[in-house]
Length: 288
Image (tube, rainbow, N blue to C red; front, side, top):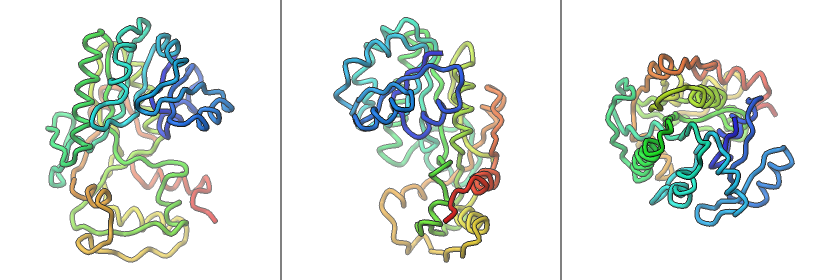
């Protein structure tokens, strides 16, 4: 399959690294990253949200699938710049849009699935809801299935609590009753592959682990794997946090993945943070 990736970032590159039958190209924000990816055999074109390398046009026109991971701002930069070119891409058979479970907003810790209403409490969440709707409408107008994958908090190699502990950046901020879902980047790659392979209509799918957990418990578990002291608890009310970090604690929900397990056959390799962190620790993550 010929896949064009709008945003060759952490999740997209991990997906590509696990594929054997995918010819891929895509966009990055800086020329230096394009050169680095070229050395790894990935053709990348610069798109900074407004200006785009003219050489990407034929690659987009030849795409059989799109993987979109660029976040929207006041508008979706991909749709703003490339909607016409995507409409003209006659070989296109599927679109996967990476969104976030943040679109649901706060549900007071209750279990929710894809039928839950979207009521994000932030501008970035509302922008995601709008972008989801626009991408699905574009696909419908083309007769191309669009799969919206709503991702939980992403972790994986180089980006995990083990690394934060070793670097001294891990904090155990406690807000009673607060839980978060997480998702290992390898399981995101599985979900993307399943969505691209699914014939027929697209859909909206939650992509998360199966044990939403208090963040302080995850930090303590990771510390135990490394034999490091457990950081002290900090009450949420008095913790020194950025506005963005604090905003994440405004949403409290438990996200079900029953839909994607039934609809796409998703079977998480890391169903809880324990399996994921154990595997990362065994691979040397967080070691001095």
